[in-house]
Image (cartoon, rainbow, N blue to C red; front, side, top):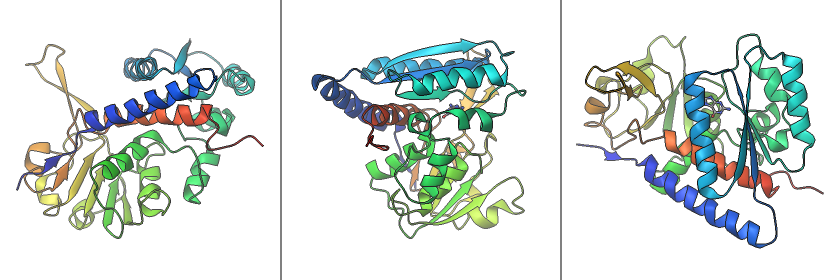
Length: 297
Ligand code: GUN
């Protein structure tokens, strides 16, 4: 058996095409273009790459955007004051503070300062809480992108056993919520594994759907997965590679070559989940501009 490839690059392109058309319709009705305010604190190279990809995607779909690059010495008070200005600025629809933040800043505090109606990352406690309650909310982009991939390929989730490795606030935890809840088209029996899980294989071997977001290169090997399982690899790890010009290559958390022989579906790295994160951010920013999730009354 060799798994079918879940082509995230292609599906992300389709999502972006749809957003581009909707933005165009929105503007044709006399509305200004959606606007995303990005905040980058410090000069972490990976964060620069990620925010660069997000602003490029905005330009591609007709969303306006600006990135505020702040010194990594900025105080919490100053950063929160700036966010409060963005909250009350009617020309800004979405606010994205790139994580991680320097260690002297609390990401919880900073995220909670963002108006939840502009929280296009879906990280604010109001959006996380509403997700848990199956209520309309901004959904965290990476897990929302995974659900979109299942929808595109008609991969059934209902009543399956889904196992998520990793319990981060950005991916693992909201992923497990989406997989289990009704309104996210989940309805799966869901298990979360994390760094305290004693025997990972005990759980992964029973997974019909396995989502891996652990940040460990090649953590999941063929002997850990069930024959015919759907494998989603959220990991993006840099590993040394002398044959590449950059000196490194990107690999996922799954040993792709061996696991693809056992799985029914599998996402590659790169070109799997990564492009979906950015596409779903575009979708969320348009929803914010249209006040679709939180209507003004
Ligand atoms: N850091 C890693 N992923 C993300 C993301 O999706 N949003 C933000 N704001 N920061 C991140």
